[in-house]
Every structure is written in C-alpha cells, then in structure tokens.
View (cartoon, rainbow, N blue to C red):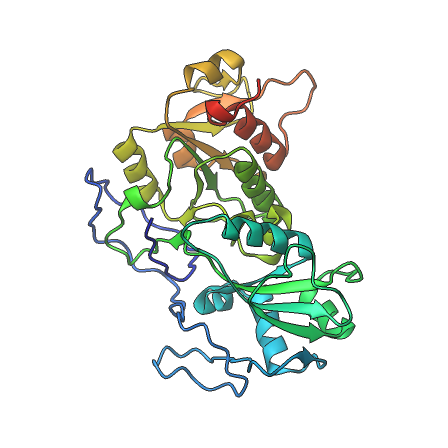
Length: 354
C-alpha cells in the first residue's frame, strides 16, 4: 500500500457533487486554516535552527552522544511536550509521544511483524535506573535517560510513578489526511481490506475515539474513516485509550465526499448505530443474529455518531439505521460500549466466535 501524508486539519467541508471514478477530481473548498506541511526529515536540532527547506519548522536534533536529560527546560523536552499537547504542531512535525511501556511494546511488536515497515521509533525516553522493558531490549532507537521531574512533565498523568518509558514515534504512513485542497484521492489504496470499515462521525471525546480504535483493531476490522469533527487519533488521551491502535490500524480522515466515493467504488452498505425511538420517521432495524448473517458477505461501513449530538444529518439520511435491543429502560449506551457490541457482532465472519 502507498499512502500520501498531509498535515491534520480538523475542518468542516462543504458538500461537493460526487464523481464515480476511482480517481476523484474536483474543485474542493480551500481549508479554512492552514497548517505547515509535514517535515519528512524528522530531525531535531537542539539549537532550534530553522529548516533549510523553508518549511518554517524548527528542527530539534538530539545528538547521539546525549544519554540523559535532567532539566524540564531542555529545548528537546519542550519540543516533546508541545508534541503531546498541540495537534497542529504534532502533525506538522509528523511525530507523536507514546506514554507507557504497554502501548510502546504493542506498537513495536506489531511493527516487527510487518513485511513493510510503516512505523519508526526515533527515541526511547527511560526513567533513570529503570531497566529496558522486556520485549524492547533489541531496539535500535536512541535511548535517553530522564529523571522523575522530566518524566512527570512529559507523561501528562497525575501519578507518573508507574510510567517508566515514553517513546517518540513518527506518525505512521498508514494514517492519511485528505484535506479540502486535495483534488485527487485513490480510494483503492486506503485500506488493505474493504470488507469492514468503521466510520466515526464527529467523535470528539478522545477516550471514546481511542476505545473504538482499540475495539476495531481487536475485532480485525479493515480500517477507520474519520469524518469532520473527530478529535485527533494521536491526541494523548486517545492514544492512551487505544493502547497504540492508531499506529496499527489504517486511518483515513476526510469528508463525506470521499466516503461516498469509497462506498460507490466497492459497493459498500452503510449502516449506522442509532437508538431506537418511536418518534423516528425512518425505520430502525434491531441488531440480531439474523441481520448479522445476512451481512456476512456484504462489504459495509459502520457509522457511529458522537454521544452528545448523535449522528449528523447526512449520516442519518443516507445510512440504514440499526439499534441494539435493550431490556432496560435506558435510551442509549455510551458510544464506545455500543460500538464495541456492533464491532464484535459484525466482525469478519472468519474471526467470529458465535
């Protein structure tokens, strides 16, 4: 698979007429906010020199002889902190911080299993006197020791005693952001399998988004499509909730224009999770084994809306609505809980255990 990376731009797109061909060509609206393009050199100049390529980015090169950092005022520490806190900065530099031994190990193990490498760890920050975590002892990345004050500042968690490792990783090539200025997009290259694609519609809570990514990874879905209004999957809370799944799942961020192109190209069915209501003008089917069996060989997109606002008007209009039957009196479930049920029930049939 070949991916073209552009910087993350969480904007809203105006509706554009859909074209049928795989290669989509259209005059799309200009993005409202411009973010600097990604710096592929991925160097960090500790002196803060400006990129020679006139990208406007400041590079922070951590020399190979640097083995420890003890000051929270260190320019490299400030750079890493900004990567964790600022989405635009994170995507313009093409890097993210992964906090904690478990997600780092899961990402690293996944990367070693790939024939084509899509993930790169540039630096592993270890708490001083801590052992190199099991499973990471053969990494070739630059290892730097940091004290507890630096670890607490970079980790962003209230209790950092259990945090012994932070990795600086390059955002994977399996992440693709199709911004409003992009006139062409080959949807055939987005996902390795089109049989099951999760679509998130305005999921702004990073905990919910991260949990949904983790469930999609666990149930072997082919990838995730983020519609406008979703939070950054490399947000620190989303990363923590996903346990690093955003580095393992193919993720595409784009407008309905591109999602409909994907649907038409592969004749995909659009399902949307929706609470059952007597006031609905459109019928709402119930999730059942019979429905699941009827869709076993059908490629589909599962659309989930935000917990606060639900599905967007567009999603509710074009998707077949499906609810989860509940014996209790609650109107709806948390979106990550409901999504987990949908993802499990509708997972590819060769992975299903029911």
